[in-house]
Length: 141
Image: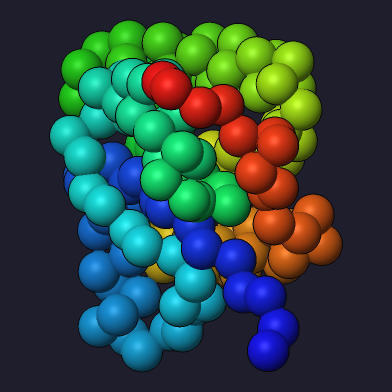
């Protein structure tokens, strides 16, 4: 039996979420290793949510936001998210978890082929990194 990664994806419902729906309608396939969750805005996604995703067993976390970043329904939400991702990746490295396990891409709703391609690339990256071992996990958060 070979190891298969398990990923969680948080998609901003106005753009990346619609791109995921369009991929389904247009029968564009992407890896089944990811569970996608629509959220109002990536800025509403707390770093605690991402840490809890890893603690729950995710091998990677994917975030899809609206492009351009100034196109946010919540005005400065994408800028806040960008700053949080930068800091969270630095923190992950301190705990021995590769920062490459967290990825964020920007979309407009017609970019369903790009979404599928990026998800597949991310799954391949996680496969190369391998599973997160239990000693790398942060317990008790």
